Length: 316
Length: 312
Image (cartoon, rainbow over all chains, first blue to last red):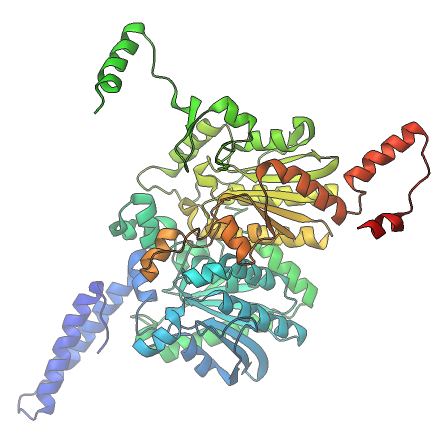
């Protein structure tokens, strides 16, 4: 059973019926419901396609935050081998909201960094729901420094509602930590590739997403502030999140049109959570292609990255 | 309510054909409630004389009072796409822009100026908080980049006066992109070997604090300025706790090692000029003054530099 979203109700109803019939069949009742199940399955697939064909930005935000959506760890497990997590910022703490370390991608040694939201209550608490403190960003900077020294490409997986707003985080310089991480991304002379797999939440996301190539999953979002936050500030009414989501242009499709990202990784009908393996595979293909493309000399890579960001918005 | 203020005064005013006194002639100290006449406040650099509270300062006033002799040249405002997202909340974004332009006489929230402070040629990039909360959008981002490029072209240090609530939400993702864009400009200035001094004024938060405003070679804050990443309300709602006394103020940041110093407004110019002279290999202002005297008065015997040091 999935965690259904509001707008998936037609699908939920059909899949509910299918489940009922299957239970009936399994219980050994003599009625033949096989045809009915096949018919319902076709209808439910159709309903799912219809719903996902026309997702609104606000609905996409909900898909991007879906609890069953594959998270950073799922990608790392499936796409990398020999992943060896490295911990700590060497100043204060280990921040589990950002995981990172050395790994091999198609056999090539790389540095992988990403936000992990956690998959159940316990792991969500451990990873602070993917909301990093300054230590997380300082760890990222430390890992990027090492990647730079050993000529390893940096691959980042972005999935955060935002940097953590807390007392300690502010005291230890959340703003500065984010600024330094963005600065580090811009200075690297190795290839940097970012993929937004769920939520790209503001400064907390850009801190590790200032890359040579930036991709987004089909139903992921990337925004300067959460739709709810914008609604409460601009409309003084958090129920206007739907309008904020539409107006702020937060979807992968919007960002591609605004020439902010380089490409979209397609999701299976019904979102990444319905067929994680296929989406992760597509993501891997995209990362692989980008790595092959980014064969320029180190200083050129840095120059291209800086020029890419300077060019954003200039030709709109 | 008060019968005299609510009834008699308006009645008198209407009889005399006089409008109510414009409110901004008297300014209230947000800390003590004390009323102060605007002329007196302006003379004191918009600092309340008794409480020392640093009021927000209009950017043109800031520039006039900061540069030697009030002389400076403004850089033209860059041309950027207006309202690319066709955004509207309770108001149209284009209307908000029009209103802010009429109110402030500025094109957007960033102004660039060139001039000298205590004889040091500099470029100043300054936010005006009264323009949509000093927010960072495409126009401001482009202006910041222009300011840095000008500093590189003229081989001058850049001084940033930050005053901003953060990114401009009405420009959505395009405003977020100003974080890396402005950071590119900071890096280019640093690579050119030029100093970058940041003055954090009230308030500096959100995306502005999370990018160029935290990347200075030297970070200075004005007394009492609110500086931080997340807003107080957001933090309180997240942690459901009361925030500590003085949280996110300039002094709090200094005590936590996040800024170099808290400097009262009237000492800013002298402090920055002194630092810049040291960073750029210029003689100290005292030395420069002495040299001028020596030139005009036929130099007396020079004191060896070592002897001076031995005194200290």
